[in-house]
Image 1 (cartoon, helix red, strand yellow):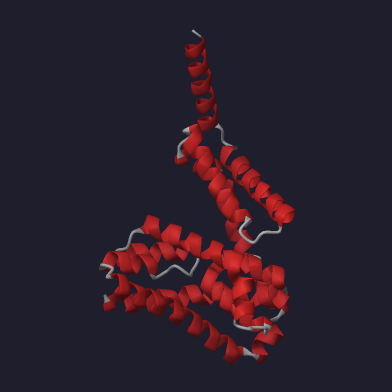
Image 2: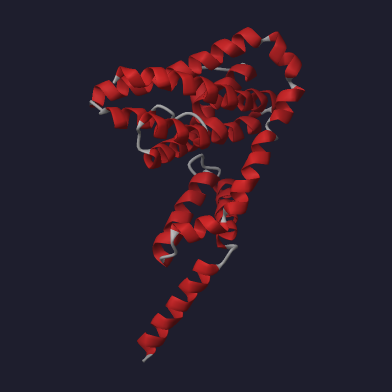
Length: 242
């Protein structure tokens, strides 16, 4: 009898979670908040709030049995807020517009170099590991924002779900290791830092760039947009190589 009652209670709890319109919001924000607390408490680079949030959300869904669809429906408001949040990146860019005008040649060169480096690295790895065409084009948009990357992958015949994971991992690792890589190569110019991070690790990297300084954040925010456009063009060309 006790087993039956326990199973009924678990089923009722799962049904309540499945029907909750706020589950996605609370789970996402709570997991991210816990990640921020762990980052402040430990100071470890690997305690990245976004990475912690992803792990906790996946673990919760796997253990509770709540479907991803139910979670996603509850998190729609966060998706809605992503657009104005992204647009707000234009504010620091506007504040640094004079600096951008003075260094536009270096900025353009950095953006083009960043996009080409991303595409060429994927091409070389595809040759090394003998990817087929679908696998190859799946990785081409790894360094741009998810919305654009999904469209490119789908248009070129890649595996969209894998593209999303690759973009997410690229952003997370960029967020965690950007500072260390820049120090390793002795990159000290704020404009160069921002362009390198934004063109390599899209929005997640930009979050780290904004922590470094206003100039880094502004240039990284610019890189998200321009790199996305250049990758659309570049990926279409590179897709013919394999």
